Image (cartoon, rainbow, N blue to C red):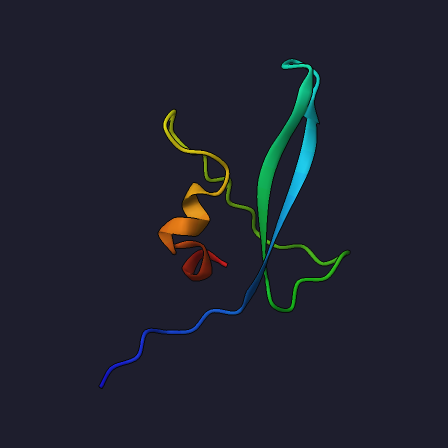
Length: 67
């Protein structure tokens, strides 16, 4: 039996203020295990389409592989 690779990460939902839209915008932040402030990590921004929201990529199950 084959098991998919396990990826350890933390997922956090926060709000960021958009001055252009004049409102708080929810975002999902994914950080890999081992992340700590002050250490440089590569960044990937995943943008959702019109019919999705900030939780879409996490629900698709690909964020673990990217973290």
